[in-house]
Structure formats: structure tokens, C-alpha cells
Length: 266
Image (cartoon, rainbow, N blue to C red):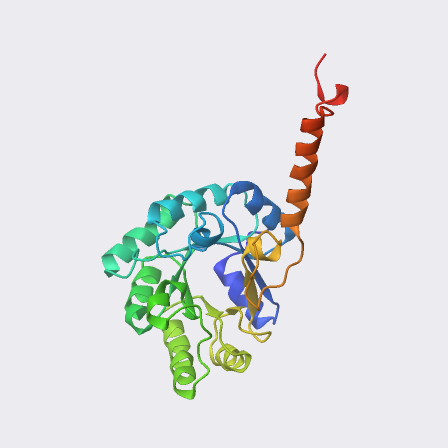
């Protein structure tokens, strides 16, 4: 099975072949996603929301991200594995950023890192990628900056902000990022950005014109409770399926019909 590499992902844009990225946080889920044919598996700091039950991603630690990346790596054969750098793992200094990016590779088994990007971190992206670690940028809605933006709001609707994001995308490419996540921006702006950079863009809430798309596995599989963002499409309803299975188990145990002879040892 051919491994998906950074050069292959860049070639996919040139071939106009869409890139698919999905999050994972554990070995069995990663294995299922990998076998399904996704190109990139992201161990997102979204684990704070969907795994830890937190209201946002800010409390997620570097140790937690390395742990989840390590166990996800055990379930992957084909997909490219990217680790999401959590809040304050790179903001304080380039030295912190290099050290923590290195931990994703050395301890977690990741093949690249993702960091939420603004003009202050272009030198950080450059330093990380010069050390031999591929970097995925992330612009638009940046969940680690919700206290500045005032929450989870669409970015780039105003002309000035749209111009800033377009320039930031180009600057992120120039800093050496190999790809770029566009989150919660208008579709026309996402199209302009995608056409303006050579590196692949991966959208989430950014419309159909990006070079690829990403969703959180809990959202697309129907495990997340309502409400979910507008951009989420549920491809299954595992929340109800699991609940129904557990209800059946509860009922059979209460009634004494489980375990029966088929599920008991002689």
C-alpha cells in the first residue's frame, strides 16, 4: 500500500484530485478511516471538544496531543498523519515551537504538524519546516483565538479582512507551509485563495472550491450531539445506533435473556 507523502499531496493539487482529511483520536478509529481511503488523518486539538467534553480547545496540552497522535499512528498504513499543535505549544517562542513540533515526530509518529496561523507566526512556520518538519497552515476561523474573535464566527466577509486573509495565505506559502486549512470563510474568498497559491487548500466550512475537505470524525459519523455547524454533513447516525444497541443490552440483562446458552461457556 503506497504511503501518502507531502510531495504526493502537492501533486494531487496539480492533478486536480481532491484531498480528503478526517480527524481521529484513537487506534481503531484511525484504522477504519485509513482503510476507507482518506489521504490525511489529523489528530486535531478538537479532541478537547469531542473527546474530553471541553467547551473549547484551549485547555488541551502538548502531552495529550502527543499521546493521541502516538496511538492514532498505530492504526495507519496509508494516510499521511498530521498532528495539531495545541494552544501555547508554539506561541511563546520559536524554540518552544521547534521542540514541540519535534515531539510530534519523535514521540507521536506524526509526519507533519498543523498550526493556526497569523502574521506573527510566519517565522515560526519557516523555522519548523527548515528543521525538516512539514507544516500545514490554518487561517480563517482559528479556534485557539476565540477570545479575540469573540467566538466561532465566519471570517473574511468584510473586504479588508478578506484582503488580509488572501495576503496571509500567500505569506504562509512563502514561509514554507506545504498546505493550508481554510476554516469558516466565504466560498468565493476560499476560491480566490485556492487559485492564488500553489500549495493545496483544505476547507472546513469554506465551500466547494478548495483542493480538499476536512471534517471531524464524530461529526460526519453522527456521534456529536446537536447542534452541529452548518458545514457539517452527517453521513451516518452512530449516536442513535449505539444508544439503541445499549438499550437492547440493558433490556436483555434486566429480563435475564442475556447471556443465553450461545453466549455462555459449558
